[in-house]
Length: 192
Image (cartoon, rainbow, N blue to C red; front, side, top):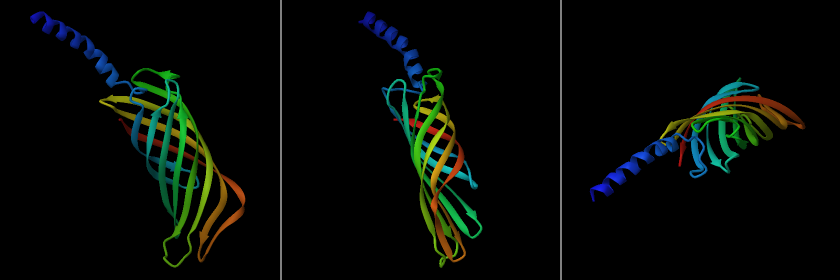
């Protein structure tokens, strides 16, 4: 009986470093889903704080996917512009890093539901949907117990109608225009 207890203690102490190492594994296909809250800066036609969230899926050993939703808004004259972005990107966590951290390029697509909302109740508002591509860089660092910190810098290129609200007039052009945005975000993730 005493021999069995000693043997069990030996095996459990040998497994302890493995359990601690798995706790600091930032990218696990065995627990493939992470949820994250993110804050940062949106800089394009205007600069503004941005807030959002994402879900990350470890699709395979080499590729991860991230779906996200972000919101930025700013008062521009008598109008508040809201940019509501929903999109995805793919990343490759095996290129640079270790078990507890990685740096990766990102590439994806998104849509921006843009709304210009006048501050006066009686003026018209304006809305447009912009389609875009995004590319950037991501770094993620394990904190332990399923938590990690992430930092991303992403450039977006959108295509859509130019829109605006001025006085009593809200309008959109009939020609497609491009707009570029850079977004830098920090997030706290939890692995489910």
